[in-house]
Amino acid sequence: MNAHRTLIRRTALVAGTGVAALVLAACGGDSEHDMGAMGESRSTPSASASITAGDHNAADVSFAKDMIQHHRQAVEMAELAETRAASAETKDLATKIKGAQDPEIKTMSGWLTSWGEEVPADMSGQGHDMSSGMPGMMSMADMDKLKAAKGAEFDKMFAEMMIKHHEGAIEMAKTEKAQGKYDPAKKLADEVIKAQTAEIEQMNKMLGKS
Image (cartoon, rainbow, N blue to C red; front, side):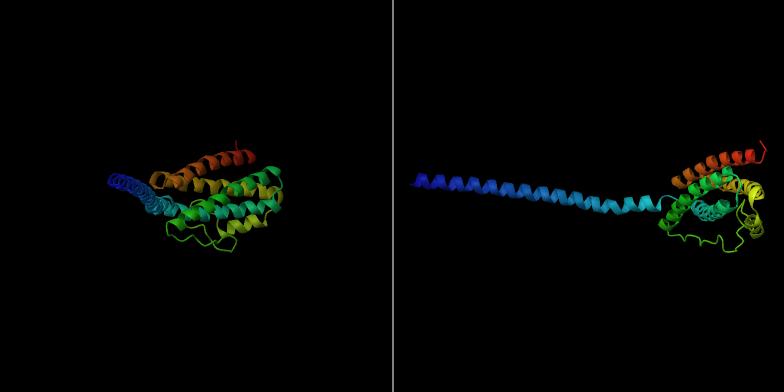
């Protein structure tokens, strides 16, 4: 009888030990998973902040703010071509310029917001003279002349003004590449230089200059 009781006690002890081990293993697994999740939750904000805020400097902020305004004027000029240009080539080029620069405006606006900077108010089409402070910008008088032109006269004026405008954008982009710190901004600056240099060559051909 004593032997039988001893056997029962040993069986119960082993069973209890097994259950305890299972519980501990389960808890340990949950604890490890929770710690991992906590680690992820802790790392996510900093990673997110790194992605949004980025490693930028004052040159990047100036580039984004100025280029947004610069692009807005180019888009305004391109939109005039829809109803005023005579040649299909001028209309196609204007559509290409607008299609490229509209998304870039949105991209740069997103950078400024993530950096805690204000996105410049849109002054295009409102009679404000934005020619000061940025290379290649058209004055109010320039824009009024372009708006008044039609047909072949518009095509010529558009190409001449857009060449000057593009040259200013390229100058700004080169400054960003030399002084900026934010890699996406420097990459965009490089794209601006390549695309707008090619468009200048195209417009010079349209004007019979090359």
